[in-house]
Length: 315
Image (cartoon, rainbow, N blue to C red):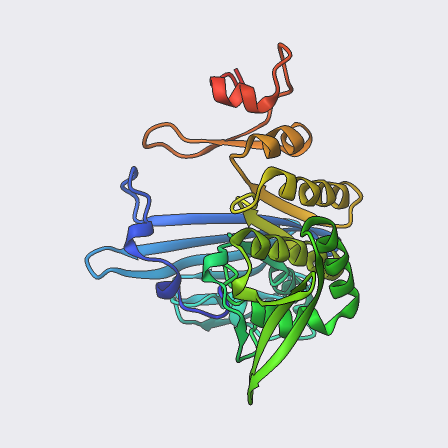
């Protein structure tokens, strides 16, 4: 989610596809839910001489019927019954869908907006995290740098989730007991972790311990609140014996329909454990578009990671 930010804050001319001469980029997303299928289309136009970006068009469909059609600064709105509504001018630098207020006749569009808010997309970087909270965050940032603030102001409000996280961590981090807080200013708190008989500030933990705390926190929060969890290389900073229990728990929750998750990984253990049942292979050769293929079944007695290493996958 762009959180109402402008296109120029989210894209730059360096993001333009370099092996093509086109000055536009197109994105599409399909979401099943609310009794049908949504299709979202976004096209960004780059004005290279002026280093300026803007939305050329933005569309949202529900079961192949338009809900909004924003083209070249004009937004055409449609109601829940797909009847044509008002046409009005809009800023090319902002999402028209994101800016529309909730109304009684656009509940389908509102559902889609709320569903997008339930995407957590992160690449965990424990070196960016701090121990202290001095404000209430709207969301968890992409590298989880504000995890402490998010934990204190969001997670800790649900003691059921906190209890599950603590139980998970007791099995993984030797001596883990509980989380604690210390007030260090008028609006400032520290997150502390009790391990055996010693209490540590969050930043005093190892990179791996902080990563594990974030992983289990995200998993339990996403499960409880019906979020979709998207993590880039969750195995970073942790050892295989540490990540394996988390991966098994995530897999079981997804299989049971209690969680939806998308992981990106090069780790052979992830590939072998998850790819057979729900894996997609992303491949790009030289300066060409990325091709996506389902992962082929194992063959010749070799596991999938070995097929990847030998270059035999999908052959």
